[in-house]
Length: 212
View 1 (cartoon, one colour):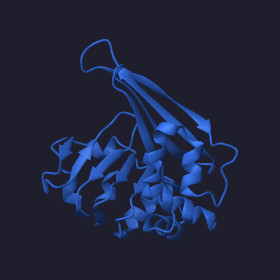
View 2 (cartoon, rainbow, N blue to C red):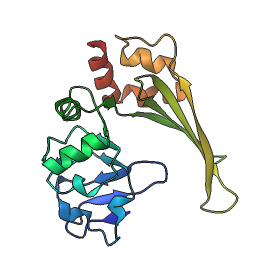
View 3 (cartoon, rainbow, N blue to C red):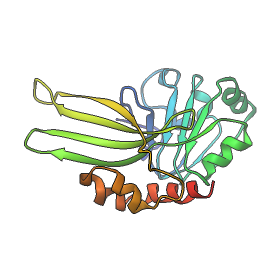
């Protein structure tokens, strides 16, 4: 985890194979890219603005010259546009991910960019005795196809070492527009039922998806 030297309320989380998570409250600005690590913005192609970020001021996104994917949570209300940013988004054919009926979808449409719903975390099942766990995420392919992403974690050969793997499965055939939260939960393993029933993000997706 790294902190912005300009505003230590802004943090960055780096996980191999995942987008850079940008967390905090309020606006992001160009100065927030100073984390004491040179040229890091040129190395990463995927960003995820998490809940709490409300605005992105000019100069921030322009620093990520290789940007390919931008995930925007629902608290983001404005991204300040410049000619440089418009050119970057179009030349890189940046994919925008977010929720339906949010700023993210509007931003993609306004700028002629591909919009794909962002993945939705469904829950985790733990086996404390064997130090194992499995998470399930509703995953959205670029084609629009939905699948279930399973990620397994288990203890490695030494303390602090983690092993596991991931695989995907197509959504159950009975999934359809108009599916309620309870009907969706019934399609998943029983261990995830209560977590899914409390999932507001999934509930909002199902409600919006039914209208499309």
